[in-house]
Image (tube, rainbow, N blue to C red; front, top):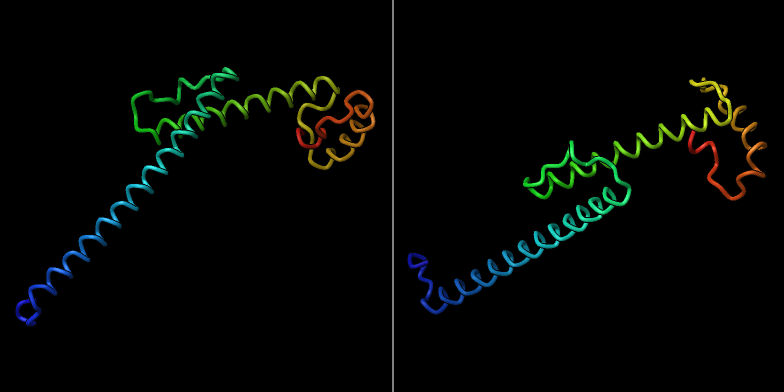
Amino acid sequence: WQELGTEQTLQQQRLEFLSETLMSLCSREIQTTEDAKRDLQQRHDKLRALASAYRFDAGSHVVEDGPLHVRAAALEASAKQSLSSRRDKLRSDLIELFDLPSSPEQEHIPAQLARLAGETADALPGRVDAELIL
């Protein structure tokens, strides 16, 4: 600035402006990071509560002293594995309950669903459609 002939007061004003701009940028970045961490912590806490409430095994995936994002991802993987396992168990139980073939072919599913819809309409009024499970 000296070689350009910029006055000392103008240099000082420019430096103050740059300082304020930098502080504002840093402040926004810190706030964004804190918000993201808070959201991740909430997601982690909800997954932890879900694991506790439904008693699924989160131990094999969870690292207790790792970074928060690793712990949340591990809990999510455990929750997905538990859901898949429970869905498979439900599918197996329904196949046994309704005496269906153990590995239904895709082309037979509509006929089986039609049969189930008739049989279960009175027994399970207002329940989830069988097609969502099969």
